[in-house]
Length: 70
Image (cartoon, rainbow, N blue to C red; front, side, top):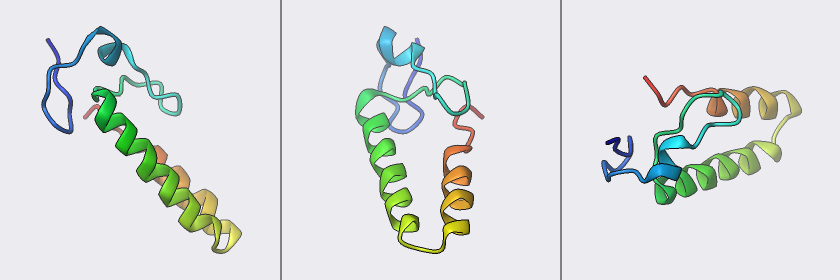
């Protein structure tokens, strides 16, 4: 039995098998928390998209490369 790393609820089979497409690691988050995480990443990307080009790629890459499985 696995639990969500964000809210500690018990994960179902689908949630336990969800893999982050960027890191290739298991996400270990429930659907609700994963949705909020995706929204935050998109909001971060949208914010930096309005700034200088070099910050967009650097900041988004650092946000996506966070290892949630440690």
